Every structure is written in structure tokens, then in C-alpha cells.
Image (cartoon, protein in one colour):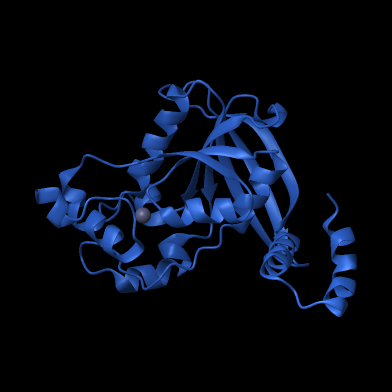
Length: 236
Ligand SMILES: [Zn+2]
């Protein structure tokens, strides 16, 4: 559907009546969609050369917002995701990049473990699947320096979540994905997918059994409302 055509009709409607709630919601939805980053380049099919992850491949995306701001993102995927059937359910994870966890294997978070669990879930899943590795999200998008500054010896308690998931939405749309099963503990990610019209048919928790993460899970559950055990529930 051409959103520009819909927008052309908007002033006429506004001129004759006060916008109803549903119209306001529709306008907001149209505006949000117009503002989504554009996919300007994509590369598919590079093998992921790991013997423990058969059938997984890499793809790269560049998205652009406005005229200048570009972002690169990576996909690890399984299946013929460039030729999905309409309404095909796809197993997905939007996985925020974490230098401290993924590159330096810092034990203060579970990011790397969550990513590895998600890769194994892709392999085990019969249908197509994607782990979208979202760059630019270090320390809830506060950045690496702020993350280190907040480090309290056990975790990185940055204040608030500044992550922007709109490029992820654009990439899912580029693939024609409308129905997803989401690997996440984060209700905010489920909400954002719904806001952009992507139907969430199921939620798959990604939880480590490592007892040393109890403090970190408690922090995430209390601060970001993640579906993770708090220390009280953990010990109960
Ligand atoms: Zn991390």
C-alpha cells in the first residue's frame, strides 16, 4: 500500500470533523511507518562456518534514516528466508550487540549466552528462523563508555533503555515477515513488533541456567520488567 496516497487525504478529513481516536491512531501509525528507516542494501548467503551450527548463514543489511544516518546490521538465518510463503511463521530474535559480553566474554551479563541459546534454537527449529544482530545497542544504546562508567562490579546498571528497534522492523518487513515466534524475555520487544503490525504468535524464553546470573536476572526483572526470576522467586 502506498502510504503517501493515504496521507494526501488526511487534511480533507481533518477539515470536516474532529479526528476520532481511531483516526488519531491511524495517523500516528502512518507517521511511524513513514519514519521507518529504509533498507538500502542487503547481502545474503555467506555461510556461518561453525560445525556446531549446521544450516545457518549470514546476511548483512544497511538501513538509512533521513539522508545521512546509516546503520549496518547482521542476520544469522536458517531456511529460504528470501522466498517465504505469505503468513509463514518465522522464529526470530532481535539480539542487541554487546561488546563486553560477545567480544570480551565479560561475565557481567548473559548476552553472549542468550545469543548462543538462540542459535541452537534456530538449528533445532524445523521452519525458517532469524537472529537479527542489532549493532549500536551497547549498554541499552547508552554506549560503551557510559556502560563501563556504570559498571558496579556485578552488572552494568545504566539508567533506562534507549534502544531503537525500527531498523529491525524495516528488515523484517523487507523479508515480508508478518508472523513471528519471538525468542525473548523482554515484553518491550513484543510490544514494538505489535505496534508495527507484526503478529506475535508465540514467545520463547531465553534463560540461562547459570546460577551466577541470579543478580543480573534480578536486576533485569526489576528494572526492565523482563520475564526472568527475581532473587525472591529464585530462592522460593
Ligand atoms: Zn551484555
